[in-house]
Amino acid sequence: MTEFAIEIHGVGKRFGDRAALQSIDLQVPRGCAFGFLGPNGAGKTTLIRLLLGLAKPTTGSMRLLGHDLPGGAAAALARVGAIIEEPRFHGHLTGRENLHVHAAAREAAAHGRVEGALARVGLAKRAGDRVRTYSLGMRQRLGVARCLLSDPELLVLDEPVNGLDPAGILEFRGLVRSLVAEGRTVWLSSHLLDEVEKTCDVAAIVDRGHVVAQGTIAELTSGGERTIDIVAEPTVKAAGVLAGVPAVARAVEYDGLVRVTIAPGAPRDMDVVTVLLRRLLAENISVERVMPVQRSLEDEFLSMTTRLENA
Image (cartoon, rainbow, N blue to C red; front, side, top):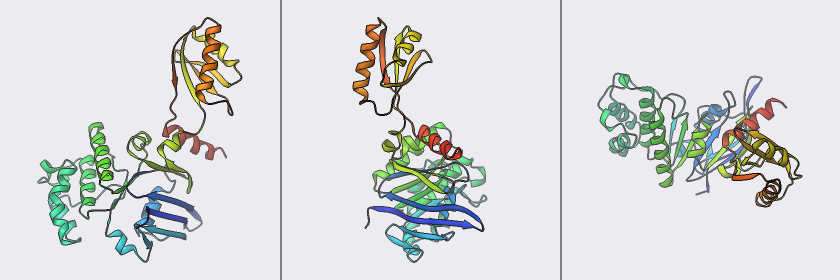
């Protein structure tokens, strides 16, 4: 068993003259929640289709659960559950009946997993209702239940929280974390950056057919400018004083406080804060609070994609 659930090397996909993917390199560790992010048209769904054998790459190689693709696709996909875009069901059948129809195409044990899968996604009480009465969010959850019938090592979920209300999204986050705790790998393709940051361990950002960044959430959010917020009075005077400190790139009044951007190459944040506080106190400016500004995954995503658009 390799340490990676998915290994992608130099994969490209062309549709005529258009390159949907260009030399993609990606490694997804086993037993993690992996977020796959990108703007519309970036190539997210195309790559998922390649992994699931629904299309063939133009260039490059892929391994799925230790099996080379496409030769080992049958063995690999037997342990994969997937949702691509909105899951489809027979509207005249109940949720339970739909899962049994799907289980018939799996091993015999799949029928025995139906009730547990329905309970796990919160549909046990509505399992006897026809799917045509389900909301979009309920159909999404039924899609996840269908994935669980194969007792998958890997779940590939494309925009799985579409249609879920805030409570449903919170429940889904707990479901993903419980699946990872069991040693499964969850690939979560989403445009909800905040949700990926709260749910996933590792992520990659794709844009214009290229992977432009990948790593742990901590690694992705640790780059960029270092920023500190300082609550001080008088605020305008504090901003003017701090703007003159050599370690400061800029200091501006922002929403009742001073937002300080640390200059590239400046000492570590603790040393810089010490210098800033001494300067403020020397000017008889009272300081109430100092707070580092945590860079979010959304900040990194917007920085990456905007930079490419302007290139």
